[in-house]
Structures are given as C-alpha cells and as structure tokens.
Length: 152
Image (cartoon, rainbow, N blue to C red):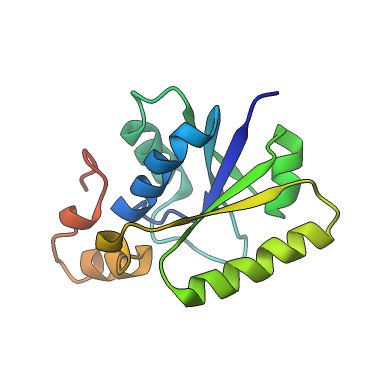
C-alpha cells in the first residue's frame, strides 16, 4: 500500500518553513500532497490558483510531491484520496497544543488517519504566512522567507 501524506494548509503564500517541512517529510512517504484547504468564508491574499502554480513550480523536479485543493474536513479529503497520514509542522508549543486537539478530534471522527508532527527547523520557527503577507503588503522584500525559486 502506498504511504500518502497530506500536508494541509492555506499556503497563502507558501514559505520556506513549509518547504522545509515538505522536504524533510519526503523520506517518510511515497507521495506527499500539499493540499490547499478552501474556506468559503475567507478570502485569500493570493488566489488559490496562483498558490497551486507556485507549489507545483517549487516541486516540479520532485515526483513525490503533488498539489491539490479541497473543501470540507481534512480527514474526509484524506479518505477520498486514500491517504493515511496528515503532516503538520510545529513552530511553537502553542502550535502543538492546537494541532494535538485537531489530531485527537480526527481520531474521534473514527478515521484511521494518523497525524505526524515535524518540528520546524529552528531557523524557520518565526516564519509564518501572515508575517510574509505583511512584509509584501508593506512593500518589503520577502525573498529570504520564501522557498528557492519563488518570486513575486
């Protein structure tokens, strides 16, 4: 059976922290799907189609990585595509507490899906999409916080 991991998020935009987690997760899985969750109640900073283009560009030379979108519960998406693992990066202890609760809820929903936590590399622990958006919004240069090859 193929080991498929889903790395869900908004990736608005994808950061070097996300990139690092995906690269470090590659040896653990046969396939990783970077899954952009679409929340109909939220408007993204960048359109979801643009985010898909960026993710596909960044990982164009990595056949084990794919990008997709979904709506609804992440566990339902995982069930639909046959994924048994959800990948989450942890920057802080607050991230752990939040993600632990979601992982436990997913188990209560009766799924066989396991949540895998990877610690963010220390040099990326302060980087978030919201901080990168703020840099961009205010005319700063976000390049040091973005994956290699990603430019605006």
